[in-house]
Length: 380
Image (cartoon, rainbow, N blue to C red):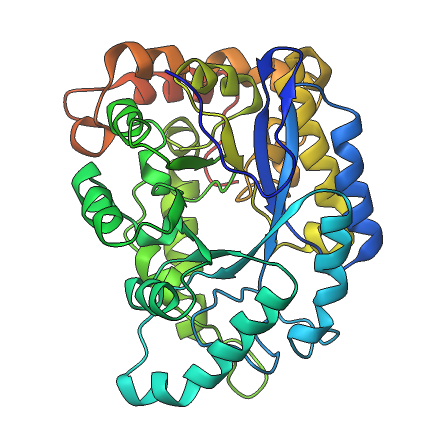
């Protein structure tokens, strides 16, 4: 199978070998952008070819369809992020603007917000930003009708689980150039291979989000917009966090083994299946604000080059969910790599994890028992 990718940056190959294309969040910091771009000079099998972000939640001119995730008092409007976009493009790296919330506004709400959405898109186009990440099909249709030259990249937050859903969507919208499948589908090899046969479509896989596999709150969490009550967080705000954490840490190793994370040493297995486009996340973390996440991006891409280069780093840094947990700092890649699930199992057996996990398939559960015995952890 031939690998496919579309890039706003230069066409990338390494010495006759297809290079992995990564997208990462764009910091609102010129120095951090420079440091991320410099990673490309230190790795051979991968390239950061895109950065992505959106306006923070307190900025003026929001369309109402962003997953804003952060508050940033230095960013008051779209004009404040233009210098960062320009810096990204100076490094021959493309920029993707996120309008990727699954939330719906009422018709009256949309009518009121539409001028902001239009002004936002027109300003992006004036900077030759032609790539937008979209979730809501209504917004996808609006952009297609009003701004047909914009390239649509579909968000993982669509949470589609069948090839048929994507085919029906693509039949209507030919400006879709890329999709990011649902996080829960990273190990559904038959599903991914089927998607990868669709002509002129890039399939980008999210690698390090780390969220609970099979999370019952996931769609609603993506729709949720946090606020505050009397200056503090309400129980409503913390609902998702509490539900996820109890599920995750009460059965820690089981959830690690069932995770949909794609570790650096597993990228080659996806390459053999024809996948070369991957996404690193992290824009809502303190480590991203401080620049610490740049070290994680560098370690990930170095691990794709040669896993021996990262054998002494904590395996937890490759999960956005547990990366800062001090209890895991001593569990290095070298210690746990061979105890974690092997991608060849999923390639050879092609289980549908959503249907068979814990019933007809016990592969991950059995590995979790080995890890629990080697490194006893429950609630970390």
